[in-house]
Amino acid sequence: MDLYIKLFDVLFPVFFVIGVGYYLGIKDPKFNTKFITNFAGNIGTPAMIFYTITTTGVTLAIFIEYFFYALIIIGGFSIVGFIFLLFLKKDVISELPPLILPNTGNMGIPICLFAYGTAGLGVASAIASVIILLHFTVGVLLAKKSFSLDILIKNVPIYGIIVSVIFLYFEWDVPGFLENTTFLLTYTTIFLVLMSLGIALSRFKVLSWTKASILGAVRVIIGPIIGFALISYLGLDGFAAGVLLIQSSMPSAVLTYLVGSMYSERKVVDSVASVIVTSTVMSFITIPIVVYFSLKYLTYLSRYHYWVLERKIRRDYHNLSRYASLLM
Image 1 (cartoon, rainbow, N blue to C red):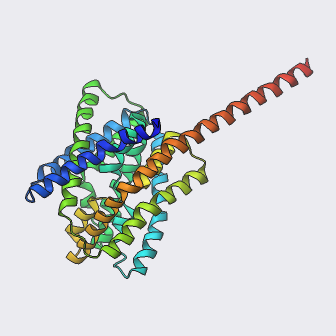
Image 2: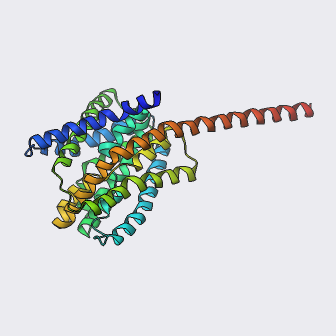
């Protein structure tokens, strides 16, 4: 029962704020989200990245480790997404981003926060950093079919990642005023981006429910399967493995729609929006299952591994003591 209460505590705040945003979007279709977008993109997200990476106990080694784990998962999903888009006779190049780029920022970071506390934030942000970089490199390349370095240079969250890595590399302590400021901006941003996600969902239209549902299901079902396969292969456990699994199960990122709307034709953009809607709706069912699994079984595996390690240490100590007595 305690686990179910924990699951409710984790997911209710996230889904509730998304619901508030959806209600506002339905009630006022002309609701202006320009301020939220500008604030989140230029101030909130860089501050959130900096705070969650530099103040939650994450080391440079952990950051790099889970940064590359996320790249592996995205690479694996790119192959799966390519196959399904070919099967559905879609524009493979332009419509691949919503399948390979999950919503690790708007939804993933808050859920990992409520599931694992501040300890989960650092790992969640390391994974989200990968997705941010890919949005403005691979995402733009696929949507525009060309790439310009200016797009990456003008992307403010990238600088949040760079500054955070510099702090980790030199092991600098974050000044109190900077930690407090980014703390306030982080939690303000989490609320605003969740609400803006709800507003965005109220405005997107679904072109073909059948094809969009298939691709949406691929995103939220195959994603955690690939994540779990990587976790099992590498023998990962504990909260970091749980964060990796949760982040890999997120629906399509809304940012893929924003990037697509700037560089792709309208038909492709509408198709991307359709996948975002269906995958997000389906995630209201799949995410509770993944979070439940993460909180229960990954924690259990972690305790089991600690138990095995403890037994091994005791056995080695016993053997060492016996050999020492023989020598004496």
